[in-house]
Image 1 (cartoon, helix red, strand yellow):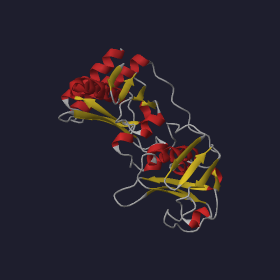
Image 2 (cartoon, rainbow, N blue to C red):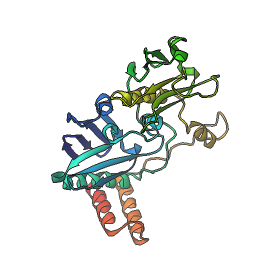
Image 3 (cartoon, rainbow, N blue to C red):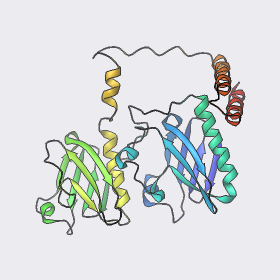
Length: 293
């Protein structure tokens, strides 16, 4: 097991999953605090890195495309204080961070986790029901329908129409966009049969965001809805499965653990000889396999 404890949070890796717990430091973003502890399976990871700085460094997880509804709904636009997959590391813990990275990378190599996209979410998304007030409205989601209520600051085009209720079955897509410079952000729902998009300020299916503290929390609503929509890669996965009604191919029989580890050692040797793995990467991966023999 590998563990790193910082003011920014605690990351623990047990060989199968990473447990990410936000810290209580004042610099921890509101979104991370509201998300709470996350359990990220190894199969959701595409990679991990550590970047050193003068006063502090950054541990960063890179998830596979399609693994997390939060990342899909926000389009990778979460800033550092709110990104749950970054951890600020103090300079006196750089060695621990590097060890942590080695352990996760070894596990990815040993388990041969592919870095490619997924056709189903591995993380469940935020729990429901939830309600967030920010910008010109309040967005609530109970797992079956979204309700949008307008504040007094909302434009007449919205407030005159009154609250909106959007059944999940009518929602085709959801998007969260942060405020950038002079451009306001938004939480927007693409609804079946709705007219072409208008600016979020006037769109009755969008909450306009003005760059205030609670704006990132609207990403929770976006992620909770996204988690319950069809996965964007699901149609492609169905096409690969063959004709409708065709039975899935049977899974290959599990090999004996000892034989599988020996085969993995041979594979690592071939990767090393062909130059895919450096000497250091080969030695780290080999030691990880030998520990399991």
